[in-house]
Length: 102
Image 1: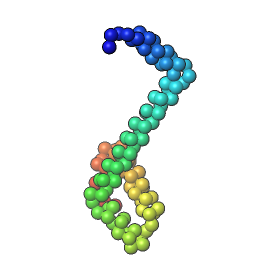
Image 2 (image 1 turned 90 degrees about the horizontal axis):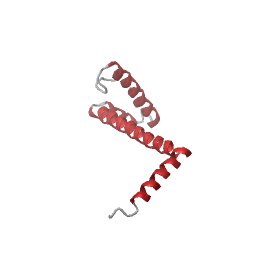
Image 3 (image 1 turned 135 degrees about the horizontal axis):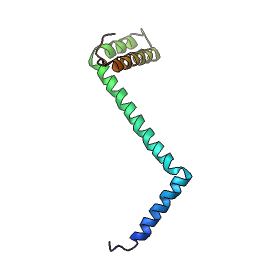
Image 4 (image 1 turned 135 degrees about the vertical axis):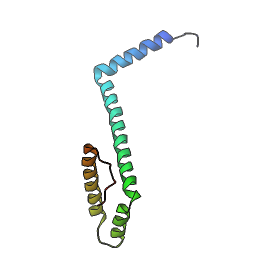
């Protein structure tokens, strides 16, 4: 409040930062933050993809096939991931994702 210990605190912060830099801790923390951000971005993309395919009858058909025993969860998951791969190729070429029929 009255600038008591401010210089000491600033010096301690700088020493800690120097320690983290010299020991690789700073880079490790940065990598952890970037990894978390990347994982959250991937999760968001996948959730958006699932919501997009849920808008039509694609996901409903897979669920019906699961209930009727025409497929199994593993095969249905592979079908969805194959669809994702195809949609990613379309995305790279500028087409809309999730809008085509299967």
